[in-house]
Image 1 (tube, helix red, strand yellow):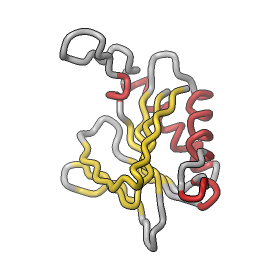
Image 2 (image 1 turned 120 degrees about the vertical axis):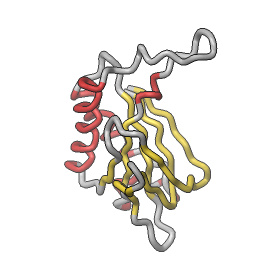
Image 3 (image 1 turned 180 degrees about the horizontal axis):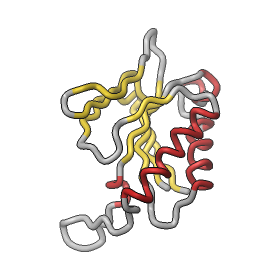
Length: 145
């Protein structure tokens, strides 16, 4: 699985003009926007491991993790994390798992984060989404398991 994690001071996601997920970050709090993609070989175990890594990664101020301060997360599925750009100018998506495989794995990341105590907002799997965020730092971390 792949994740692109961004430390943010605000974030929201819209589908068809309606906000479906937002992070409530008042008083200078930080949160994380996490874009998650799955490939053909990913499993429930890799979803769980990714969730735990995200929750405990020390990328907030003062080397804190989301788990240390209860930072909320906005998790959004993104198959384009598996773009293959080796040939030509048009990316191939052959490394991305099909929706029937990817959706439960991305949902498992969300579920495991919640089991760990995280407040998690989400986008809508497979929808055309508009994501707005203010990246803090900027801090952007790529993770692959």
